[in-house]
Image (cartoon, rainbow, N blue to C red; front, side, top):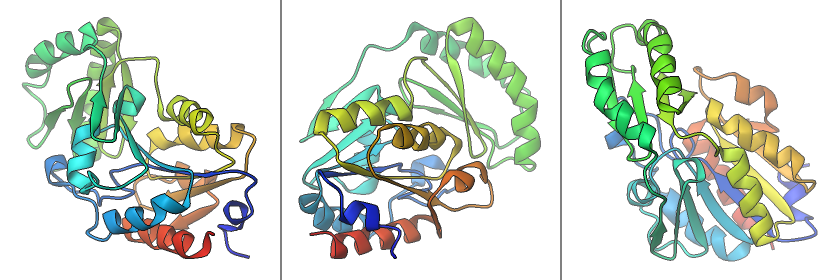
Length: 255
């Protein structure tokens, strides 16, 4: 029996909830160069009319995910950016005021990272600041060297640390992918959910899928860097290409 069977016999609309980086777009050394696989937007265009809703829940700013994915003309698509702080739908973006702690961290980070290993970079997401070590000579070592420094800064600024694949992100508290998924599933009256992710931040979405009380299929976009998500998944696929192939299968199977 296909892993998608719980969705094909769902008593209500199917919600497809997807991460972006590592799930629809391959992880690359420079996050500004990340792009969804070329066939992704067309698969979502084909799938969207057949399901209740498609939502992308990402740590990226919502508009960035729309641009990097080529998703502007995908029907029935909502993008919840910054872990759910932002919302893009129908070409309209809603976003809250900036948390004051982000401005404080933005000011202090350059001095704190002055002696960081070469290759460490900061991605300013507006509502969050992500410190990447992927381009450092020893990325794992660099990440651990910076962890306590960034945790102290986050605590002082009233922010939280979101760990990821060779990245530590300072962001406002109060929202995560699990809370965003639960709220959106209730909004659209989901009768079943497929949730796909690749990183530690997606654990909250997996947990939320299990707590919704509806049929759920949890998909891990596999990598060698994060094993925790694979342990919680119903199926592990081969990166973004595997996710797109599974979405294509769902599109062909669902009535």
